[in-house]
Length: 553
Image 1 (tube, rainbow, N blue to C red):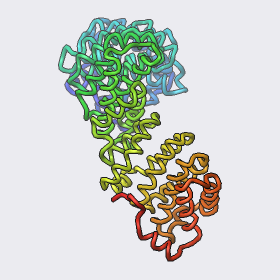
Image 2: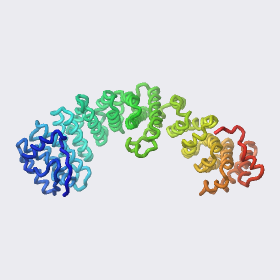
Image 3: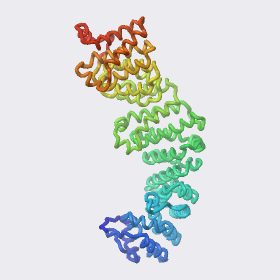
Image 4: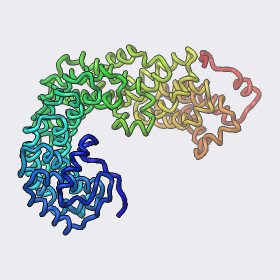
């Protein structure tokens, strides 16, 4: 049993009062900076039995203060108290003095700790529905009686801990008034300076209730949307509200319809626009808009503003992705933000509701397709839209001609195109455009193209779509460009693990045999075969010059 640094459960300014309560208590075995005893289940049961016999106010306060401090200091003791029926004992203590604020506050905080033991430890056992209902009813009554920020926050935390104890406990807490208590706390969130902390706790509890009880048939959606509208100045509260709404409407068509009717989409749009630098808010707000758009696509809900509102949402999601592009690749920031890669998925889901022209317009309005980093980000954002990706890849040739080839390569353009080719392997038009772009990038940096897998990607396209001469030509030209621009001494090392020479030879001769009258196929195939068969003086001359119309990198 070691020395534990205990903080007073009521905060520093209450230490003097807490010491007075403990001085009157027979259980005064610890102080704010003392040793915490480790109790067995039987000893914990004896303490709880003694707690029930205290009728004097100061004695009861002292006992509760001691027990709460011990629970916070020793997890084993907290588990023992939980296993000995600590929650129902706390509820009985609160019922003995319902008008005493310190008693209610101690009990609420003790319930939070004890319920956490039930949800996290198999040794303690699951919390019974009756105990969960009794504790939730007590919390609801305390919240109604004491309308201050400290008690309201403690009520929300206690309810969240109870809801986390399983479906039966969550359902019992819901029927005992957990939702009403949460909404009451939410309504009081703006009444005092500490109200933002209350509102955040209430929103987290609301989300936990929705997750455990399947959306609760849409109850409370209006209050959550109102919380969004009232707190446009506070990004943290907006993030919690959007997250709670997402959980409330999840797999719940009626709740989704209620949210859309209450103007949830417009509120989320305004929240995202108000705080563009707050990554967590952007993730949840864009996800919420995407959820409602998905519902509108299936006919469940109708968005006020229709395609125009969806276009605005796509623009905000794109802006968030561009603003936080560095965070999307930072795993530590991603975890902290609750999944920053959700921004990319949200843009893809939102853009499904828009025609191709509108998506291109959104990209152009934010100049996403005219800078190297923006182009690569736009390609990732439109991963589920083949037409938009093909237009972006076709536009890459123009960027290379403008001298942005090396910058695009450094931003990851080659890898992005190869990934897109793997995503749409059966689309000959897409493969043609991709091979043309890879050829342009190979003339800028053939060694990087080969090392990134562009050679293998072009061979896959040629193998799968050899029936189309307009795919064979760019694929063969891209292969030739890589053979020409990559140092021959390094080519075998860069293409390690590939039987590239035999495969490439077979594919080039196959294209010749398949299209013997197509001049462009013949020219490109013969060049590849010449390069594969060995360098000659003529080949050396060819190596030193660029093909007609080559771009400046």
